[in-house]
Image (cartoon, rainbow, N blue to C red; front, side, top):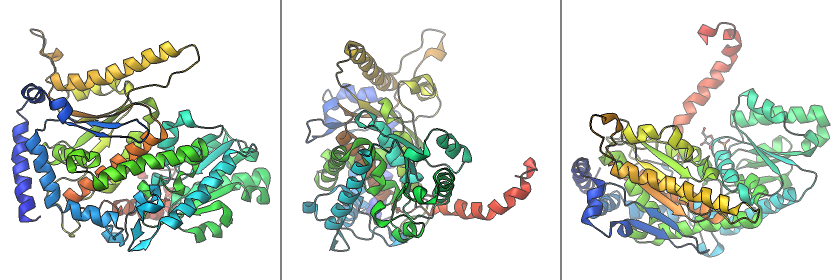
Length: 517
Ligand code: F6P
């Protein structure tokens, strides 16, 4: 760590300690404008804004500015320029990281090591979206099954649910787990004659995906015979030769590039099942939402830069307040899978203990992120958030409105929506203010002073979702730069994979002796 960075780090450590004895409510009392000052807004081109309200974080203006200085001293500007210009910032794999190009336009002129990429990106996008439309409009296909895992599953699965209200007629299934029960359950629900499988794998070597695909193929061969089974697959991969080797014809294979990390790949052809569900225009709208955040991230001043602010707050909580986990609670049922999606995005990216300089870190890096939708979460684990011994900052994700409906129940829907919003606001407020116990009833006291922030929008549209995903992607980058780690490799998952391959032959022998397994 440079001398200047270390100096900022030490100052922030002291500030973090001091903040523990400060009430967030006092920050509000001493500044009547706090609510509007600690608020950043991304003005959406469709009139729906994305608002980040961080007024309930135990942070004051000078501390926030100090966090930005820490980012600067960590080389943030330089790193962001290297990222934007397609330099090989994934140092352990010597690869650029350029997923924003997938949601770019020709005028954005993204380059990989100075070679323009947009023409090729747009051509592939057109090809896979055309394929999506043809499946979408094919009346002989009723069910689409995506076989993939990690980044080849979580993004499209999360987004298909998030945008369920924009979905067309096909039934979508996501098969990821190697557990035979998963595929058995699925095969019980689909008709071999009317299904279509997508094999989604960046590497086309992942054992879960290749094994599930082989079993599904065998099932189809049994039911329909070899030639018909062959027609039932499309593939998405950077290894087009491997897809060809298992007999998937080039017109049903869609590529992407090694500069797209698996967990950043929803914008690429990996989004095919989602595009089948929501259609070309909605998929394009999601990309546009992501691009709006890119513009904010790459150009806005730090005070107006939503991902940067989110990253700075993340570092404040993790390193200077000492919180090791964070709850993300969507008050939007259709975002039920968003916390699981974030788990891969954040924990696979920033769960590192060796810095880019090859040395062990002397500070904490990525923490645990978890969550479930509200209001359900209130009736499950909010007890611990309010009265537990650990302080866990909460990120509330709040969709403020529900679309009016002409089904005779609209007053009921609007009432339910108001209750949803009221619950979210009530939780944020209660976590902050707390309440004193009635005499002799300490168990009823809430200490309060528990930080939270809120990300808000009006309608959960494809554009909103695109903004939300890109917001969290760039947050990972900001934190990674400050922590001095490479957020774009994932060596920590390799060991388990190779050990599993070695153990597999032994499992048959140990099967009858449970204690040896
Ligand atoms: O094991 C982790 C991982 O490599 C993730 O990074 C990736 O998203 C997932 O496996 C699936 O990889 P692939 O798309 O190559 O099948």
